[in-house]
Image 1 (spheres, each protein chain N blue to C red):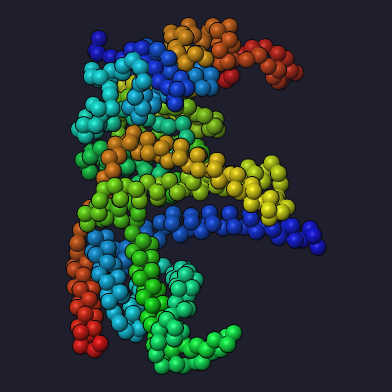
Image 2 (tube, each protein chain N blue to C red; image 1 turned 90 degrees about the vertical axis):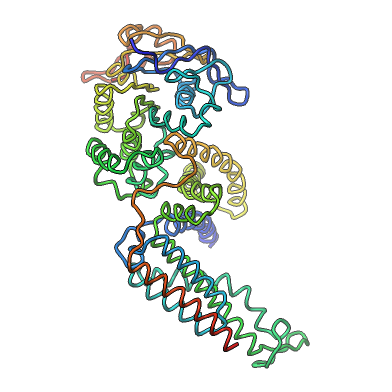
Length: 264
Length: 285
């Protein structure tokens, strides 16, 4: 078996003394599809920021691709570029990820800065635009797009880099059913093509559909349970206790009733 | 009557906020013209920026109003052959520039700032003063200089995509930190504008329209602090998103820059304009 891509050992992180992660141990292997689930504010997004080396742990260590991931390490221009080529991050809010005048410029931003060869850029650009079905959006300004279109453009801007590891923060949050389906299909394809996918989500349906492993974050900002999708998502009592599922009245065709269930 | 007055006040605050946002979006963020097919859009951005810089020197060194006026006429001609609507261009140059420059030049037409041959004698509170011919001449020259300089910069910005312009600044050895700051400001301004609009909508949805100017001012004042904090967070998020995709502060562009025959002709013409102006200054003044 190949070496793990990421190893987190007793990782902690605080924002101005307010803890966001506490003693997290996690190993991410090549080709895995991992869902990080947990209630709001448990540290899921912070974990993704750490994996993308946008922040660095205040305690513990992160090893990426066999070497220690530190700020000092990434101050080396070549190492930084190699890391960015291998790890792509789709942020929860597509607005912060789309900062260029046109969608085309935004998609090209990453590959140009990572100094991919021009012909290769053109090839990848055509492929990714076709895959995301966004040809009609290329000349438009990102701030004129709908949330679903923005999300697709943001994913395209990361997929064009062809990273080994794809980090996604709430990839389907706030999207309509069709766009959600399109994005699930794209993630499926990426995973089938050998990409390692790590996503933070509240959407248990999404986690159930595409991931192999689930890590659950608890209110103490640590991983309280890890396991296969079937194992974790079938424990309804555990999910309910951790705000991932709730009992409520809902309507069926022949009337309303109460029972706990996972949303589909 | 009272209702009408209040309505007008609420409309004033709403109009000020929304019009400021839309003005910024239209003038700063609109890059449609830069991607159209026009004369200046086809000129190499390096040649265009170089010529713009030289023309600014020409405008600043020229001592004749006719010469500076001619330069403005040339910018109007260039705008019209570069797919820029004339009304759009004239509005941006002729309406905004006088607004700022008039305030500065009005005192200079009087004899207590520019002494000379009086054209019109005036008396105010037993004080006698006059408008001088030299004062009028220097005011006209100043106004035309401001008008032409702003027009040259507007033409450059309108016909060049922002990221290409940043690349050119780096090619001209403008420090990376400076270029990076401009780039970040440009990117972040979209989000800030949306934030302002959303904050205003949120206030409006909770309290309806503001029925007094004082109350309106208080609300706007209170939200400014919140907006600054939000902006700060937003700015660091945008920066992170850029870093995440390999940004190092050095602007990169897809299209290769090539100097063609037209570019060389334009550069020669611009240099000749500068030489001509310097000669005129030397021999005529």
